[in-house]
Image 1 (cartoon, rainbow, N blue to C red):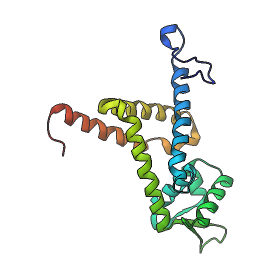
Image 2 (cartoon, rainbow, N blue to C red):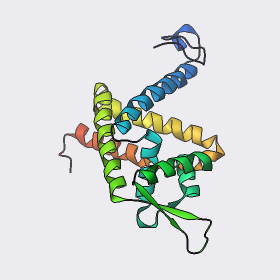
Image 3 (cartoon, rainbow, N blue to C red):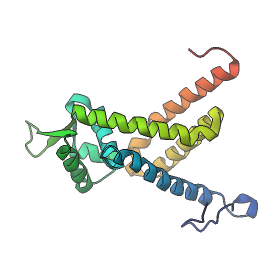
Length: 193
């Protein structure tokens, strides 16, 4: 791994008398870049970008009511300008529809079409397969530990940034609890139900 913008050369850490924290963040930054690039390739195979796929997921989760541009922007942590561009492209592709609010004509609600849900699922399946392949080197215990550590770090970072309220207490914590319970069952030798 190459050195990173935090000035931490590869392989340098606490054993060299230097703080390991910048190396951790450097590895996360580089890993994020690599995963985003490979994830975009999966999305592009289905005519989407990763941000468009993420937007489709948020819209699809809202089900029948759909989302406003503002709500979508909050969930994706993006301002109105990029959200409008993403939604425009999704609408042109037939993956979402916009309906003007009856109570306020300035507000439109974005809803996913069946085609949008189908393409979202196809990309999700490709990303899941990719995640399984990338994480197979960790083993079950390593995956649970990694998820737990990343959840703790995410909560710590979110706690220091008031703009990230939506991440506090997110589903990540519940996922970690489920993985720990599954690991405990495996460790006990009892069958998993």
